[in-house]
Each structure stands twice: as C-alpha cells, then as structure tokens.
Amino acid sequence: MRLSVVVPCFNEIAVLPALRARLMAACQDAVGEDFEIVLVDDGSTDGTRRLIAAYHSEDPRVVGVLLSRNHGHQLALAAGLSFCRGERVLILDADLQDPPELLPQMMARMDQGFDVVFGRRRSRAGETRFKTGAAHLFYRVLRRFSTVEIAADAGDFRLLSRRVVDIVVKMPEEHRFLRGMISWIGFAQSPFDYDRAPRLAGETKYPLRKMLRLAADALTGFSTLPLRLASYAGFAFAGMGVLLMIYVLASWLAGAVVAGWTSLMATVLIIGSVQLIVVGILGEYIGRLYMQSKARPLFIVDQLLRDEAERGLR
Ligand code: UDP
Ligand code: MG
Image (cartoon, rainbow, N blue to C red; front, side, top):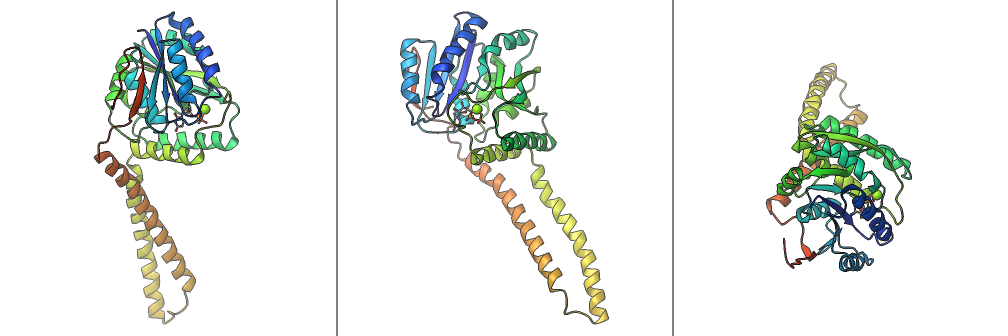
C-alpha cells in the first residue's frame, strides 16, 4: 500500500463529512486507489464512532481504530501509527486546519529523498492571539532547552516514511511529544511551509489545561535542564546568603540587630518559594518516571474496523 493517512478524532462529528470528502480526493490525486485512511476514535461521545463505522462499511479504504476511552491526541496518534500499513504515512488533524490538498506536493518533496516532510506554519488564521503567542513562546523555550533540534512552528502535520513510522511505533514512551520524537530520530527532514486555516467547525479539543500538559511533556521529554536550573538557583542563593551573612554579622558587631523584619520576611518568602518550585520540577520528572515504570500499554483498542477485522487488546 502506497499511502496511509492517520487522523485522530475526538468529538469531531461536525467536520468528519468534509474531512472524508477532501481527504479522499487528495489521496486519489496523490496515489490513485492504493491508500487507506485510518480514523482513530479517541473515546468520542458525540457519534463520531458511529460515523467512522458507517464510513468503514461503505468503503473498506476507511479503517477505524476505536479506542476504549479518551487517551489524548498524542496517544491516539500512537494508536493510528501502529495500525497503518502504508509505505508513507500522512498525519493530519481532523479539523482541516492543515489542508489535505497539499499532499501531492508533500509526496513530491519526499521523492527528493526525505524521510520526513513536516508542515511549518507560515501563518495561523482564526486562532486566538493568546494561542499563537503561547505557541510562539513555547517553541522558542523548547528549542533553547532541548538537546535535539526541534523545528519551531511545526505541528504534527507531516508525511513520514515507513522506516520512521516503524521506529516511532517501537518507542515506548508514554508522555509523548511526537514532533520531538521524530526530530530525535533524525534522517533527512524537510520543512514544508504552508498557511494554517481556521478550524472548519466545532471547537478546539485543546483547552489550556491540555496545552500546558503537552508543553510539560515536551520539556521533560527532551530536556533535563530544568533539573539543573535547581542547582543553579541553589548556587545563586548560596552566594547571596554569604553576602547577607557578612552584613548580618557587621550589624551585630555594630550593635543594631532588631530592625530588619522586612528583609527577613523577604528572604524567607523568596527562599521558600524557590524551594517549592524546585520540588515541583523534581515532581514533574519523578511522576513521569513512576508512571512509565508501570509499563502499561500506551492505549487500549476497543474495536479495529479493518477488512480482516480482529478484536482485542494491544
Ligand atoms: N484530539 C484527540 N484527542 C484529544 C484531543 C484532540 O484525538 O483528547 C484530536 C482532535 O480531534 C484533532 C486533533 O487532535 O483532530 C487536534 O485537536 P484540535 O484541532 O482541537 O487542536 P488545536 O488545533 O485547537 O490545537
Ligand atoms: Mg485544530
């Protein structure tokens, strides 16, 4: 099979009909008939599941991976990638923010010898100022912290070669940041600039809470610098402490020791909060270490709607 398209869907009933029409056309344009569309239902509650099942029974090129509950975008992608069979795999959001019509051009770029062709957003229409601003800042902080080169302004919209998909599927990490993992894999990767459209219909499935979680997964997944920041803060405060000690002793010798409530409170509060922040950073890493040590499966499949359909756990 020449091409698979993996689409994670969480309560996307409003966009699925348009998605299917545009995606089918784009795939036919790119490779003719030899493709599959893997729709991953990430525990939707709005009928997305039923619609995927209906699409599958109308056209066997639509494969349904129905997860047992909501696992989150990144794990839904992991599920889709592990079941797709194409020589090349396109990852696409359900909401058509990333135009499937770019597929033939991305395929042509890959023909030039790339293993990854990743979409890079030239512009983001229809997103809140806050979201674009936060994304801008986040990518820059991540690039500064990370030891691998992670492209700024690139999402999960990308075309992957089979060998890259096979490697991703073998990576067992639970707190996933797929775009970082793909950068980490290496090989020849090419950016592909495009303009991001607004969401076609429905609401964002990434509220602030999920954005923050993804950002924390990305930072902890690709950097241990935050852990070292704790020691840097420690050294800085130790230095200041020595200076303060000299001042305190000098005041004592001069016989003026009672005043200084303000500076005392300030010191206690600052040191106290820095300590708590550092403990929190440790907690972020230890929590992930703990969850990963359980080695649970990344996702549970309720039903696989594929020609030679099988039922069961993975
Ligand atoms: N998504 C998912 N599970 C979730 C949240 C989101 O599968 O728990 C899917 C969603 O259906 C969409 C993609 O992830 O296909 C990106 O979500 P969305 O477009 O809402 O994010 P945004 O573009 O607003 O960042
Ligand atoms: Mg979107």
